[in-house]
Image (cartoon, rainbow, N blue to C red; front, side, top):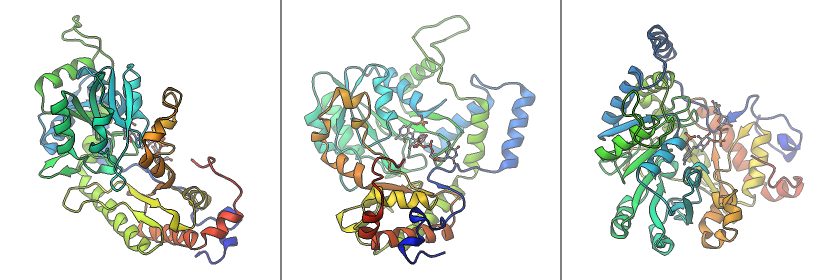
Length: 404
Ligand code: T4K
């Protein structure tokens, strides 16, 4: 039912627009029969983890798809980041954006490396190379760029800085599987790139991730570190951890790879539906992807400025009541989460763009579980809420901070 009056909104007692919750991160699932057949093979083989045939096949297919020399499949993106940072010898301080998922910083802090937060570009939300030099100190050993929303960082500027200042360069490519920069796929830049294959990602292995690199020695160190440092049955040469991907995850990955084009097509269709349905809503900016690059269109990202007449948080409250679980990625900014908030209580002063984006950005449901009809209704809800923003904000109880 189209909302005509404020009382029609679920937040004020009307019936919700959707009977079931629409999530941002509904997993993309490939061909069920193919997956179940693979799981059957795996059970017949009784080989469940420790570099089994599915992991080997997945790594080979991923390396071919990305055009990169090495892909090491991992149990998740966070451990993959930790291992990449450690294998590259990062220590001291490493420069990262604060407008990212908290795992980017945690992967460093977990091994006592201090994340130094750098501001992002207001338009792309990506690490701003112009601000990096001012953050470099004698303790700095590296930079972690995040290809946020699947957009490539300014890799040319970042490599130039890293080379000139003798720093290591890692990319957190958790959002950017299947995306390109110029004629190369993401996965080929910096010293190493790290993917997440978490259930909510464009391409998933239930839980999972991978490190991609063109550096043979680094790949070998990463392989040792993800397997406790074993070089033989009884020989350990490094301190390592357990970063291995399981066979069932690799089976999911191999199956998902077969449907990758279909996943992109439905994301693209949804993205175009949102773009046309939300065009002209005052005070809303939808993040536009660079049409020259290969994209996965996994994130539909909105920014609300003052002209929208409704705050981002009030809009999120309205949408949640309608069962549209839009997310405030990445509120409140990693620098405002613990332990960083206690370590660097004034970090926000150097991060004005991050601070603003953390208040203004929301991410809308998309993926194979969301239809164009759903999107029309979501867009109507957004447009209605923006048009009636002042009245909604007056009538809403103070929910700031209460929404997820
Ligand atoms: N770097 C960056 C830039 C990242 O974004 C991430 C992960 C990482 C590193 C670390 O990679 P991993 O270690 O995770 O591989 C989600 C994901 O859990 C997280 O993987 C992701 N980023 C982040 C952006 O989003 P949450 O806590 O905000 O959302 P979550 O997991 O509750 O899922 C979102 C919605 O999806 C849920 O409301 C329900 C729905 N959902 C979720 C799952 C797991 C489903 O419908 N089915 C499911 O199986 O973190």
